[in-house]
Image (tube, rainbow, N blue to C red; front, top):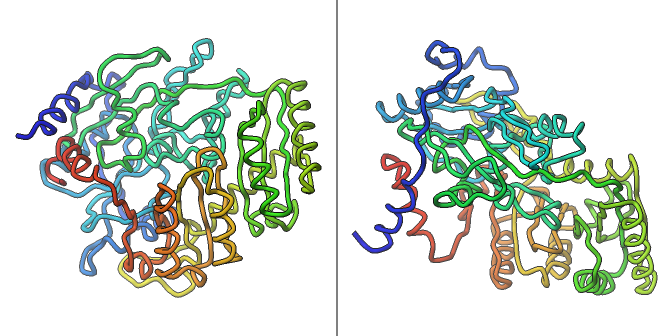
Length: 460
């Protein structure tokens, strides 16, 4: 065994085993027959994993446990009889990436949605992983707290699903990513063993930081059943400043803001197509969102307005309901309609059911964000892009007709040239089959595979 394998053995297994579920015992879980599933679930599963089902294979069995103990029973059984399990929350991202072949069971955590503890005084929130972000925000609202996450599926996304896909959104600029917010987890390993790591307090140094390992793991290391996240005080005032106009002037504004004392909670480049869908103009824009005390927000907005005028940029200020609606529209447009289609497993999707758009996640050095947005708009003007000016991470949704393999590889090469990446999340199967979905070219792949073997030896 090599030294790195010894290291992995040391860090993977110091997790705390969990006692049996202490709720009232519920009958052992059974699968839900395909025909008894709601049309919504049927089309989500079909859209997401039809390519992973062999033509002669029956539809996958669907499980929706109501307790962590039931979930552990399901995974124990799957481990013993060697069934391949695909894990999801509400299924909004089942078609992200590339499904592994031979899916036997689909396991949803949507009914694991109980609140465990809302420790407002400690700014921590603990809930089961199937709780949606929308539910969590509703619970936190009376305390004037919130989770600083704004994903592209804000209504349906579960907390576990957000962590599994590391889908933080624009608020990452001010509050950090999900890895920074996650304080503790409970999960079930592939063999059905329940375990936990971290805790429910902000100052937590117990054991290896499995929370960072699970964030962005897409459910490959275990099934999250409970999470503890850091909460933040809701800003007293929110305002958004849109700067629109010449690309060179926008790049100067972006740099000036980055080097100033201004403290926006979001700083996003928006393509002309995306901004036009919001109803706030037609030109490429830089959106700066400020959230703080009223006086501070007003002062910062005025400073940005003055900067924009000095650079010859058009300036629009949004507040109140229009401001909230603006950011909601951006998420809605980027989510697209890919999860609103219906079809049956076993049959090729009809032409009208094949996704008409692609969704890519990409990232590069923040200094290259303005240039990259212009390149994308030149290659495919109808594409909607939101690119975070602080982190360099972004999302792209564009018509399939405008994005073939050559253009996607060109975008990936451009991102790599600026120390970045490009991942194809949603697209028709015919396009996904033409290129590497993840496109990872680093040297950490052997380490990732060894970690996966430690957690799930049967599926390594």
